[in-house]
Length: 316
Image (cartoon, rainbow, N blue to C red; front, side):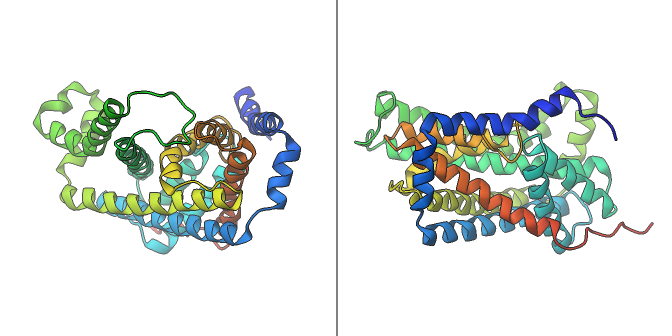
């Protein structure tokens, strides 16, 4: 058996160390008390919302793969997506482990490796694209009414800050369409040869407009249910804040969880949750408990990826 590299060992120990540091910082007895008083109704509703979010994520990925001309029947794609969740939960590397496994499952269905990997990368971008756009839009609109009374973070000028956030959000939301138009009007020659060839193939594919709209609404549904799952976990842990607070906090929390620092997002997700909710005066033990619940939702759904057979190899 090959020995693990030092970087792999570091990632294996990073998650428990980070999580342990956060738990110690918020006092373990407070966190235990929070878990003892969880509202199980909100816990169950949060798990259901998280499950629906991942089902829409699998559908979004399948639509992308079909646009790329890949063999992507929905049932194997859903199973491969949940197998990716299992890999993210059990292996180091943030979401990279699951993404590599998903690409491998597409190859097993008889697809080229490059296009399979590209579908996973575009799917990951689609999720982060709408997540950050959604959080920015909600945050900017809320700032137009001024900072809320419970805000404990920096007191920046509300109007100019809202305008800056909304302009940046609009630019991010339109980025895929702008890149597409730029690629068709002279941007490609600025790229390396390998990227230029792949970009040319993508630009030549028909149906970008319908794909853009499809990814927009599917990613929107994914984020609505993901944020709902986060909010339900927060309500279960006693964080009684407006839904928009969870929507704004979702972007840094989910992005931190995706970093290839540990596995399953453990540690980085809890750190981001504690920092974000400290800015609204929330008890840190409630924020950490909410984040742990969100991680447990994914861990339970990982069992769906471990259950059943993997997609059969395609016959030549």
